[in-house]
Length: 124
Length: 124
Image (cartoon, rainbow over all chains, first blue to last red; front, side, top):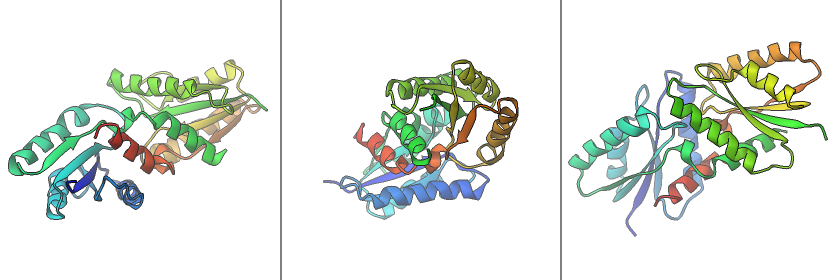
């Protein structure tokens, strides 16, 4: 199986704690040790580092042959529909040997409804 | 058991499709028919209807004795830390007989890491 990395792409915030929340989530996902995912990285569309190009290049430098890009967004707005795909197209032109696959954004995740109920259950 | 309603509070967007994504999620959560949740409603902090006060009042009109408020936000910024609690405080003063409980925002949900991996698995 090719070495597959997961890149979580978030919007990025001027508030560093918000960016750190995303980084912590990336670490938690990595700790789940999904057998199909070799490594998990995070990147930001703007306002935080690494950028999407830098995050993708980091995956390549770590040996990724395939990168799955997960938009950590609740809604399918312009960022999800245009900005992220454009960054991936630019990457594909520079790294034609690395397969990149964009999957649905978080807000479209089929298990999100269950996640919300579990979040409620954690506190009540 | 008291009649408990769940109010999903999202930011709200000028893009109606984004608000509709939230409304659809609310419906999916309702369809899960959690035995502890009598009814599920959504409300928006700004830019969309119903507002948080209107969403809370709707729950009361439907017979809620207890309302669980779930911030549908990825990060614990000002909206989660200040704006939503302020709206709940104002509500509590008007409706002292209705119990309102604010739970953690989506980004802090313990099962979110698993949700992301499941989202990846849906496509790869």
